[in-house]
Length: 241
Image 1: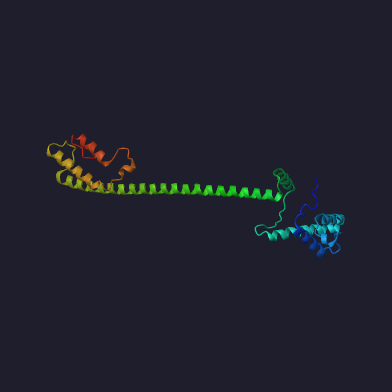
Image 2 (image 1 turned 45 degrees about the vertical axis):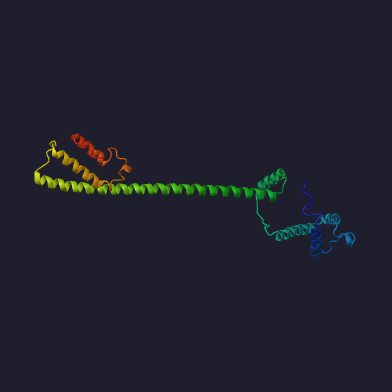
């Protein structure tokens, strides 16, 4: 169905009718409306006068320019709207026209809805991505803190064990130098009490440096547990773990 040629003219808008007469008066001086001057703004008479000239190619070109000028005029009067021109494929324009008819709106209105919906979806996805990214960064930071803490525990624990081993080797070498080489003979009498006292003293010394050793989850247990097993193997009361 061909589009009516004057659908852009609002018959109930005297300001637009006056603007059309003024435009044609400046650009198409031979254009007149065959009615009394008192009725120059009558919409039906104006449109009839326009129709009478539409067979003239030059007037049709002037009419097209007038329509474009009116759109620009309306655009300047709307502070939140601008007139823009984009080239679209014919298939896209056909789809846009079908969609506008289906929705009962204009093609411009449909484009506004599509663009706004697309932006809202993009904005919502961006916010969700930002939220997910922030959550991931928080978890990553927490894991990094835990790993750093575990690394410090390993370092401090190994440091303490090396110190204890150095002391043990120093004292054992000194002891063997004085009384002879250790022969793994069973302890008896007061030697058991002395052994137990020495173990508890050593464990007490290492208690602070090794307080976080449980975080390591060692397969054979803590140092106190290992010494308890060795003390029990000698039939000596185990030190407190």
